[in-house]
Amino acid sequence: MKTYKEAHRPASDFESRSEYLDHELQIMKPKRFRLNLPGRDFRFEWEDIVPALAGTLGIIAMYSSVMMAWANGLSEAWDHVTLGKEFAIEVSRVEMIIPAFLFVILASGFLNPRANLAGNHGPMIPLIASIALAGAHPLALAILIGVLGLLLSVFKLGSRLVDLTSKGVAGGLLIFLGFTGAISQINSIQSWGMGLESETVTAGSMGFLGLVILAVTVILYSYLARIDKRWLAIPAAAAAALVIALISGAGFDLQFTTEMGLPNLNPAYWWGSTEEGWMLGLPTAQHFIASLPFAILAVAMWSPDFLGHRIFQEMNYPKKTEKVLMDVDDTMTMCSFRQMVGTAVGGGNITSSWGTYMIPAAIAKRPIPAGAILLGLMVMAVAFLGSPMDVAVWPPVRCIALLVGVFLPMIEAGIQMVKKSTCAQAAGVCIFTAMVTNPVLAWALAMFLDNNGLIGDKDRPKNLSIADKFVIPLAILVVCVSAVFTVGMFKGVYGIQSFL
Image 1 (cartoon, helix red, strand yellow):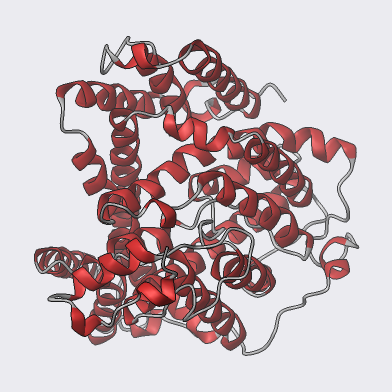
Image 2 (cartoon, rainbow, N blue to C red):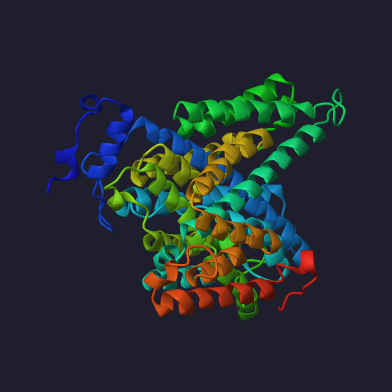
């Protein structure tokens, strides 16, 4: 059997660029937990730049949101803790240096290109304030997530859960997450436009700017989809939003406050005192107890998150490319180690598969390693330079990047998966349950019902074992329900108090 280097052919041998990229995917043979080298095992292509840039923009937005949520929640939960924007930016930069080098460049770029990059767990961001108020500790939470994730990966339960999720359930989950995420970003753009105010600009007078940016985004995204260049959507749409905002006179709202340099990379500074860093010291037994339900919830949400990202590869890659598809269990392993190491050095991220990289990479028909290396270098450069972070977190840039790079493709992928009436039924139940409760419970319940023939394809249970029909789905449902009620996720909407 030929090696990748022997099977490689120049792009000029193919009639189209798409055929060349398809061939590259089909001849790759990435090595798991062994050294993969550029030229010998994979190549850099200019298409790798776009997902790398998209992932950089996305992760800056995610990290800044996570750290500000921690800062606000911990400051409210503890009288002696006073954390603000400067703290959030500094911790974000810590996450963008050491974890990016170890788990993006080295892990996914050179050592295991089957593992998707360990990024941010977006669905957990709204819960972070509740996590802090419940008495949890970021380091205790990270250790528990890492241990639970490793247990799942060792016993191959992550990939098994993905296999047990039908197209109807997965499609419904993608549609719901894509729709709610898109609505959130649209609302953020509208609020930003209405809130612009200065000495010469009255509040509300520039509200039209949000509509203009969104209208241009729709037209640009539609055009890129029409010419089969959707993988350019994030940089193109984000750049267009930036230019429109500046030309329209909103530049006064863009402030450069982050200075060039390295953040404090000493773990003792972050966790060794109650007067500096996180101002929490090392976690105690009580911190671990308070963090456990949230750790269970975070890990339970990994499988549907990973599933959504792998689906994009399966939908955009040609046949005979199984060897380059994201391995769920390997990704879970890397996320687990990254969660513990990243937080130990001072970070506060809650980790999951890096969707803002994987989705545009899959659309661009590119494998993981080359883009991962470029992304890691970009993220580290931005963390050092400082000022690009101020641009990336500016609402018109951040919201548009997430809108076209993550949420709109999720809606499209979900709709494409729901073609048969049986799939539509399972998807409908999943979406409705998610609206009533949340995506985690919706996935767990719909998977249980679908695998037992109560919704969706009635012939599906015939091909499943007793464990796949009853034991595993029911266990997952019980775990998810217990975690959700324990941490009080329904307190605000149904008045059900936390069991903690």
